[in-house]
Structures are given as C-alpha cells and as structure tokens.
Image 1 (cartoon, rainbow, N blue to C red):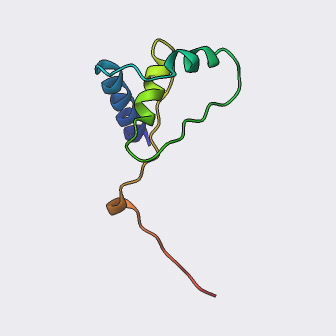
Image 2 (image 1 turned 30 degrees about the horizontal axis):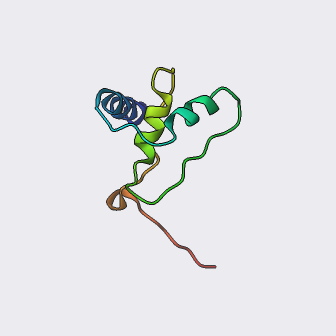
Length: 81
C-alpha cells in the first residue's frame, strides 16, 4: 500500500510540474473550493479531468489517489451457487 501511495504522490508531483493550457471554468472551480461541498468532475475518457483537478487544487495541500485499474492487473472471479 505504501508503494501505491508513493507512486500516486510522484504522479501528482509530475502533474504539478507540467505546463498546461488553462481550462475554461478554472477560476470558478477554484472559487468553489471555499465551501465544504464535494466537487465532482465528469467527462469522457482522456478529456483532461485529472489535469483540471490538479490545476484546481494547485497551491493547496492535497493528496492525489488514482483509482484507474490496468486491465491486465485486474482479476475477476465469479462463483455460482
């Protein structure tokens, strides 16, 4: 588990160090961080949701956890009764 969290930290730091085009709505999203409501970013695959979230949280103290699972590493077991 420790290796996974450290890997996510490295991924977050890589995102923070990269240069990206400022997304539309970013300033409004940053303003919305002032309340305690949960924020949800939705969109199709590869649309930039993670980058938008990283840009939104830039300058804040936050953890980054990626729950994407690689198909090759996922094993499903089905049982029938």
